[in-house]
Image (cartoon, rainbow, N blue to C red):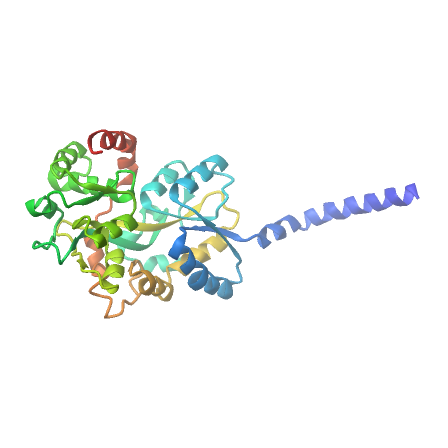
Length: 347
């Protein structure tokens, strides 16, 4: 009895060793899902209902979706380390992605693996393709068309005396708040790094209301609690289509944007599948789903915008050259100091 058990055990050990030699651990890894991430709410719903099912059906690749915000993903990745990320492909605004890129979490995306990169507008491609912007949400000076005589068409128009006391701005910890500060530095100081000049000019706009998220800005504008403030074109489109008397024009000095950037994690064990996911998202027909569902500016030049939406999505194709892209690697070096100063002087 003992001998039989011992022989059985030895055969089992040998079989296990052979299985290892045959690469079964690799098979097990191949069966694991591609881990991607998403914001919650309508964004998550759209991903689960309109995007992911098409990808899984076409490729046979199963996915796992992690819901959260940039601060959550930053903390999780830093805790896990570069070599053992809990995600394979990461979605994140460029300002936060730059932090992780500088820490070595990402690697370039090969054009040979993601051929749709070749068809993107220039503003959507990162240096060395270390990250890619899949779609854009440019911002302008939104205003209540029924409550203001002036129709702002430039960032400088915020200093119009008519708007005094009726302006909404983002908090500095929101990407929109930081981009606004850098844009004002660029306009009034000649460089996005002349933040002292920006502080001096923005101080002249006080008193103004500060909001934490675009959704809050939408509510404030809709209620008339503010009559003018930075807001992205897709949000304005959504409100206009619901009957709100809100408008926005491409600013004369250029627009900045909420960018939806995708990066390949250097430590991912599912890179081949990750490249397929990125290439899928950059495909014209998939880009068009986002255009029709969220009124975003597509990155792929082959994506079509319906005629009825063109007035609501004015910065597409060649006009994406009007979108200002900030050097986040440089800007982020002073981010903590800027946030601290803003909280002391502007709140």
